[in-house]
Length: 256
Image 1 (cartoon, helix red, strand yellow):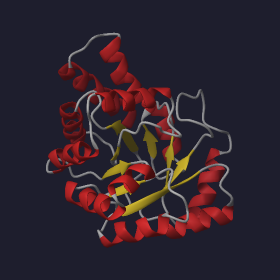
Image 2 (cartoon, rainbow, N blue to C red):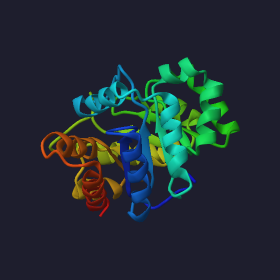
Image 3 (spheres, rainbow, N blue to C red):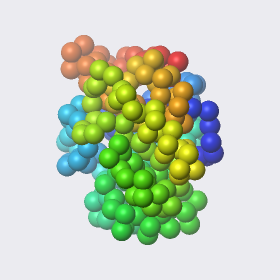
Image 4 (cartoon, helix red, strand yellow):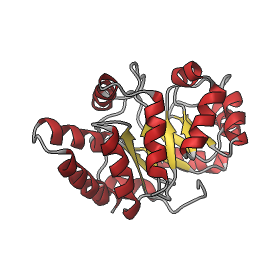
């Protein structure tokens, strides 16, 4: 299910935020939206690259008692109703704690199409890539503006599916504009690696998604979606049903 698709939006959701039922229903609702796939984050107590909005959502999900097995159950519950790709964004420490073999087996059973492990080392990645390939999954790898060309080439040799381009240095979050050199970096990465390159765009707008999709293979947006959920919970005290309606419309607007 990771075949090349026309560029478009890849929403990022935090599993279990604000509840497992909410995540399952939103995944189901998105099957009718013009998205290209979804990344679902495994909440982690010590994220290294996520800004405060996503960190808070992780903290709340974990405080509710969410476990790794619950994330797999969420995906499994929604999988029969959706035909778009679903990728798991997960810390290497979670994979190690569960055991790489067991984690990949559970990911396959749940219906994930691939994994993104942002903090995995180049030394450890080949072993996980072998396991995912054997399970007919893909391991997508990250590159950044500071990744030298020779390292990009090594990463591309390991990666399957696509490269995730981190468009801005530092933690994820709101930015007023995209970097001036983003287009040239992404275009070069696509040409030199031969892989699709999807771009993490932080706080998304429809115009930003469209801009990125003119030169990249897709735009990955999470901060604005998660912050919308938080706002509806905390400031507007909306019910989960109302939040789902609002989030579905918000993601539809982003996807254009």
